[in-house]
Picture 1 (cartoon, rainbow over the protein chains, first blue to last red):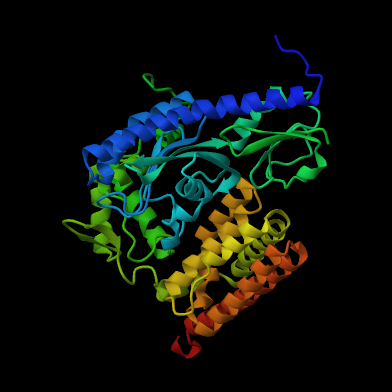
Picture 2 (cartoon, chains in turn purple, red; picture 1 turned 120 degrees about the vertical axis):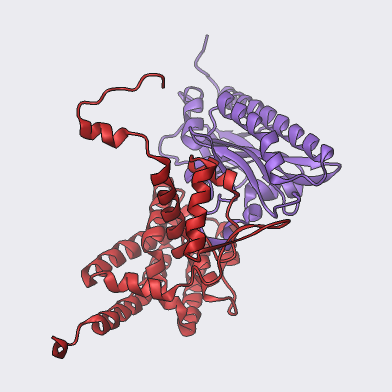
Length: 229
Length: 256
C-alpha cells in the first residue's frame, strides 16, 4: 500500500530508497562482470581483446536483459590488454551491437575515453561511481547516467565495468516516488539536478543547494536528495 | 521471427527482402570509404578486427573480408600480420585535399550558402546554451581538445570537429548533439577546408580560445557571437575557394 508522504523527511527517505534500490541492483551485476574480468586476467595475464570479449559478452547480455539499461560491458584501462592499447568490450542497443574500438566518432582523440568522468573517478578514487546526466556522444548519443565500478587485479586497475541508463528511463522509474513529493530534488556531485518533483527543474540544471532546508546523502552513491526549499 | 509477413505489393516485398551478402560487401566498403574520406576515421587508426566489424555491422565475416579487399584496392587501408598487426587507415587516405575540392566544386553556390547558414546557426546556438549550462570545469576541459601549433592539418580538423561536438554535448540535449554529429559527417569536412592554411589555423585557434573563455565565464551572448564570427569567417573563405574552383572548371568559350 502506498500512502502519501506528509513530511519533507518522509519524501526524502522515499526518494533515497528508490534511487538506492535501483543502483544497488545494477552495481550488483557490474560487480559480477568485474569478477569475471578479474578471473580472466588471473588465468591469463597476457589477456587479449578477443578473450576478454568472450568472457564479458554473456554477462553483458544478462545485464542488458535484467536491468532497464541501454548499454553494458567492460572498458579496458590503457595497456591492460596484451594486444590493444584501449578497448571497449561493450554492447548496446536492442541488437546488442559491439562497440570494440569504435565508441569514438571522430579521429584519434576518440579513442581516448580515459579523460571522461565515468572512467576517471573509479580510477582515481577506487570507488564505484555514477556519472551524469550527460550527453554521451561517444557511445549511445543519448542523455544518460553511467554507472561504473573499478576492476582490480592484485591491486592494479585493469578497467571499469559499467552500464548506461537513459535518463528518461530513470525518470520513469522515479515518477511515482516523486509524485506529491513537494520540492524534492535528486542532485549529483556537481549540484546538478538528476530528477526533481518540480516539473520546471530541468535535468542537468544547476541547483542552488543552499536554498533547501533538508538534505540527505545517499550511502555509496554520488547523489544527495534535497527538500524543504 | 518464424513467419514471414505478406505485404500488399511486390514493391513492398522487394523493399523488405533481405539484402544479399554480395550487395552488403559493397555497402560496408562504401560506408568505410566515406568514413575514411571524411576524416571520421583518422590516418593510422586501427580498424576493429574482421570478426568485430562483422558483429558491429551485423554482416558475415566473409562480407567484411570482401569489403576490406576493396578498401585495400582503393589504397585506403593497409594490413599487416603478426603481433601488433591489423588493418589500419592508410597514410594520406584522409588528407585528400583534391577530393575535398572536388566535393566543394560540385556543390552549387546556393547549396553552400544554405548549408553554411544551417551549420552556423546550429553551432552558434549550441555555444550560447553551453555557456548558459556548463560549469567552469566542463568549459575548461574543452581546452584539452585544442591542437598544438605543430600538429598536422588532419589532427587540426579532427580536433576542431571534436571541440564542436563537445560544445554540443554541453547543451545537455541529446537531440541537438545528434544533429551536430550529422552535420559534421555531412558538411564538416567542407567547412574545414580552410584549415589547410597555417594562418587560418592560428586565427581559428584564437577564436576557439575566445569561445571557451566565454563559455567558462558563463556569458551566452558573447559565446554565441564568438561562434558565429569564427564560423562565418571560415565559411566565407570556403565560399571564395568555391568561386575560384567554379571559375577554373568553367569551359573556355573559345574551345567550342
